Length: 217
Length: 224
Ligand SMILES: [Zn+2]
Image 1 (spheres, rainbow over the protein chains, first blue to last red):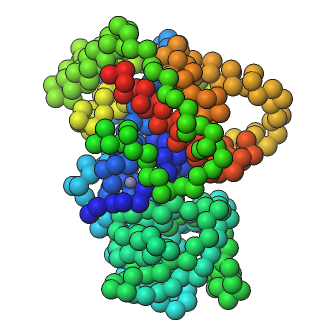
Image 2: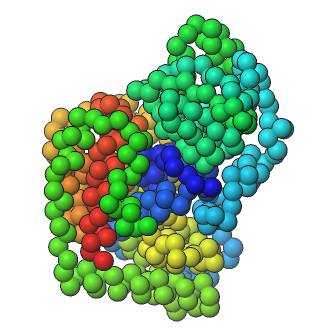
Image 3: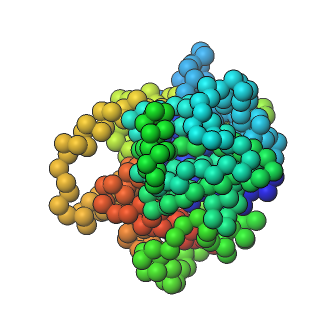
């Protein structure tokens, strides 16, 4: 898989610092599984973190090495799957991501129709962000829309065009309130995407607005 | 690949040029002073990594104690600078150092040095804590007074990031780039949160983070 569309470095720095909300973090994690370039970029952002944050005046903890070595068990449940299972690039695939993160086949997701050729399944929603999977039939023209905030879209399967740019499996589209776009799925295959959005999408025409209100997207 | 990363801007198609880009792109990179201290620094990084490999492969308690001696104070210092209460910092330190001992099997020196790996462990611990405190923080921020003097604010952040080397690294950046990186790394704010706080367009904050990061990364690379 050759990935050509990457998130801005600002996303990767936020990922390395742990500054992202869960939905956006998940989309970036999934891209990293497919992208050696961004994985290297994250490593460098972590390296900078170690230089910046371990470089200062050290504190003098009371805790000793022996306290730790003698401790029985201990709770390491905070060690997230992201850290513990962080796979080497190339050893895994987006299918592995779908299996391990969504924990079910795509067909088992709670799909709802969202217009001609388009189905969406909402995975997560709170006051700040939404995470969903979109599934569009070949040739589907998605409603033209702008955004109230950031939107990261990762292609899991198939491909779509936005203007002259094609986004294929593993590619990540980095959009925000300054972006106005109308994705069109390629004609040869269905397209499945994982998307995180901040704030509600703003559709350019009135018809999708009704769909939007209905679906709560 | 590293060479490619450094000479080619990171995906130039991913953003629209902004006024901010124009203002800083042309500025020359100030070379980072490469001195004996840096070489020593690299030796010590290699030493730390060897210790962690011994912990991983041989469950070597002496190597662990040496590693603990090198990192516990640094990790604790980092926790304290992120604003964590001293009593809590001690518990969190224990969690992190326990993970170093028990999860050393996850360490891969091909992917990260020991200090980078331990930083990412500490960062992971903090994510959990930050998420549970998020609501509280949000409430606090809403009622906190606006800082009248940005200069004082930036100096305070530099003091919190503390340490000659890190300040020296960021001193090579235009102040607006340095402060975005400090807000991300030290205060743990996302680029969206920074944009809201500084009342800047999101694209401007992204440019500052990206350009600052590119430059610091080049400096770190040069110092090797
Ligand atoms: Zn990438």
